[in-house]
Image 1 (cartoon, rainbow, N blue to C red):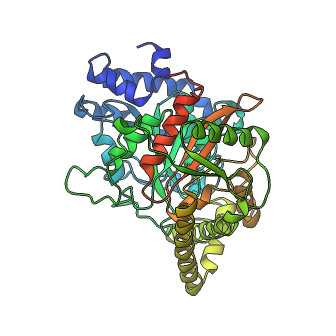
Image 2 (cartoon, rainbow, N blue to C red):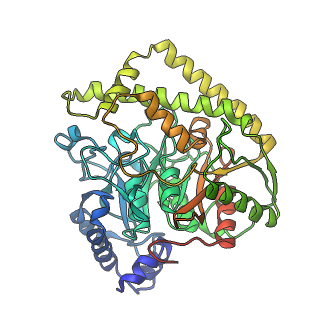
Length: 472
């Protein structure tokens, strides 16, 4: 198999090769391992597990949606049988044991033909927008290795952008799918709350904020991954709150005229970098030309919702980490100082404060749903500018307030979707003066994945994006 052909293909294309007998799952795995070795300096993969993949090859169904496609699992989230979860932590690297069974989502990915052969780098316990854990490896951005790849799904995004795999598992509790996707020039969909299974071993301990799916190079791959993730499991029924209308085959059917609200500035009035503002304006013009109604939205209308979203993320993340630290009982130098700071903050929360936050979050989600009935789809820049240099988002100190404030400055609208339970998708759109990819975010009401994917497909067709590893 020619290296250029593998690197230029998306997951749908690779599966088509297998279905037609033009490639074997074994040959695709060899190609993926070759790319992983060539890109080892990126630090995208924290565990390479070829033996697990080789054992799975005989069971691949050539008719499966992603038959034989090499795949990577994020080292945080749904477990992979036979692999430990380190979660970016030095403490867990020395103590974690291999999972005895796949999580439900990983089982569905495997049933769809995906072949996991490793796990991707994350910040410790996912608590950063940079995937640079002290335990290593340091994850670099393939577009410019002096820059970060984002977090917490930074390893996944770097691996896809670099051409190691066309698609990789990712999770999102405050922007962790969409931010790395934006900085690495990829598609990243955070599904609606409750759409994706999170058991039996990875229960959602973040108050409903977290969701899982993939980062990918094409809209059609993301649509197929979503359809796979919400299908009934092999061993019984699974009741999804979403209709099955977002299969890849439906992507090219226009979604019908949509109302789209365009917010370019952050809720506090700060402006994104010029190229990112221009990307949002360009996307708005293209969608308007496609027949959708686009109206500007005063970002101040979203200020209260974004403030509540960030507060909810901070409290749920810290409380969750406090429970994890209590369970693990690490040595003082076993986890990073910022993780200790978050755990201390979480431990200090009183039950009444936590319950009050849950109530406030539910009320905010309800009020935001009412706003969405008026404004329709929300279009924003995914992040406020290019990725920061490596080492910018440090975790060797304990200023938690400054740490979270940096998140808000870099991705002012990211946590909004998690707190409200809405789906949101990051879509590559244009480049800045340094050649780095820009990205726009589309956020819709709960259950609107079909509309978001169709709108993303319209942008993909109107302004095809440059892929670092080749073009599909």
